[in-house]
Image (tube, rainbow, N blue to C red; front, side, top):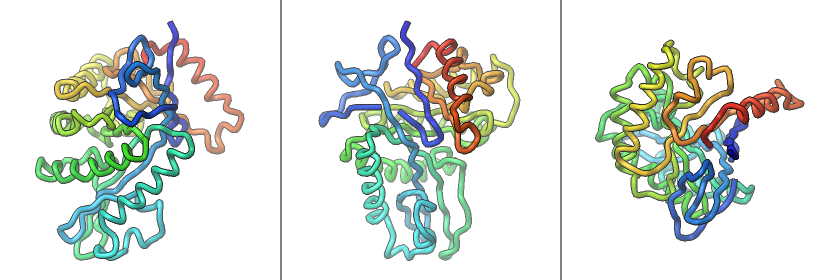
Length: 282
């Protein structure tokens, strides 16, 4: 059986096409398809911020993609209109480089009296502020998806933030809310329900508990939509606990970091060989 492995190398790497009339991305015989055509994903991780400032909310690129103006700029000068403008420019560049997916991650940035108070959640999609804020958050995320579609990109969403296991019931509720909201949006192809668990989930579990937890999260999404569910892994070291043969997901994405530590890609070659011999899903 031919096995397709999605590999994300630091900034996340995936490959290919887009049609004007979007059809859902689905998996058949371990291959990705868009309609009748085979689809090979090529993705880049892209961080966004949802800013909460002076009772106003807007979305923009990650703060540190810019200089300090992004953080300290006046609300009247920097808001959703400018944020979307910059996101569009970035998406155009991403598309021109040959990518066809952006994997969205990010933060909620909160100001009080024009002072930066803090960042909530490791990822914007892992916030637990209650349903009213969810809906505002989803509205702003939908604007980003609209831009992605207009610029010929599909979207994955990295949902699983730090310690989501410790608030399992709340996280499960959140997965149900977000998948219900975006169930009819074909730009969104998948929900990444856990990411690099070796770092983000600090509690120790046995394999049956991890299998059951991932299945609860998987079913929370699938009960509302037909979009795909994925899990992001750092590499083979995680599988001692997070056994890829037990996790509930439609496909895996792997994050290999090589900056300075593996200039000849020896480790990646070994990991790829291990993947080819082990993984049985895309």
